[in-house]
Image 1 (cartoon, rainbow, N blue to C red):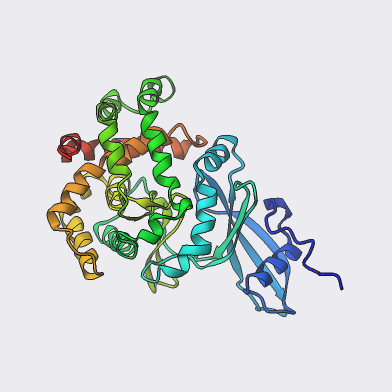
Image 2 (tube, helix red, strand yellow):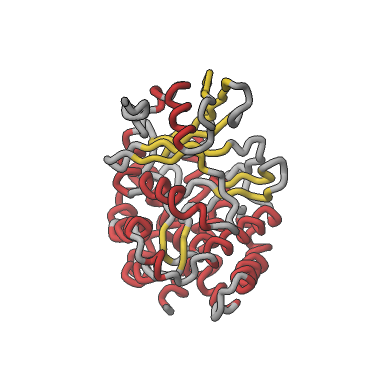
Length: 367
């Protein structure tokens, strides 16, 4: 007997995704029952990601209405620089492993439901199909989140961190070590990055903000020790462009997307990163104390012990360095676009002011 599925390719290029391939993929993952099939498919671009490409697929079925009307698909970037970084960083591999292994265990987190997640042997090509959460509301990162929006995001960060706080099992998973390893390499290369930055991006970033980032060059070893602290899961890209608000017809306050960089490290970085990139400086100054207290209280409510309000605030002060370092590095690591340039410019401006306001380098020196 010939296995009808023997010729199925689990990972294909975007252009090879047709009704027949989707039928087999969604049947294998249990989304479609035997006998149902995808009869038609249309696609369009969606999302603003710079490391991967996302599309919305509109599907029809025989029998009718036997599967989701739309799904969102994610694929490695067609841009050469972005694809190379996705491969070198391990981010493509990490997101697939996250949805395969960890997502089902994070019951307190609001995540898109994965419908199909497969990675090729080269650990670069992949296909990720997820539930379509449209018409969820997005917040333009350039505009920034309100205090109420920021609060529900901070609560999700606390849920992620509390679920994995000092977990020896997660700390041992090799594929969760990539985020820390990647940022340690980025830190080693920071002097070269800051030295070459003005030639390419000097017209976008004022010298005072670059000098603020370059202050880290005198404390690289201390910063690497902080990054490598094994504490809990760390999303590593928690910002407005990776969030959907009022999802599932308003039943879900916020859903966290883009798990390419998830790792096991110093998780409270997520809170500083989010506030530094996705809340305006004026609003952040008004609400940051309350939000850090909220974060700490949510951790305690979910069983985290021995982490005081003072610990949370001092972590925030130190970890505010991370969004600034990431902005300086990230601007040159992915494909450029008009919106991308403006995003990075504002990202660096906000996070540089954050480190000034919090005197972050003094706090790091005291560690």
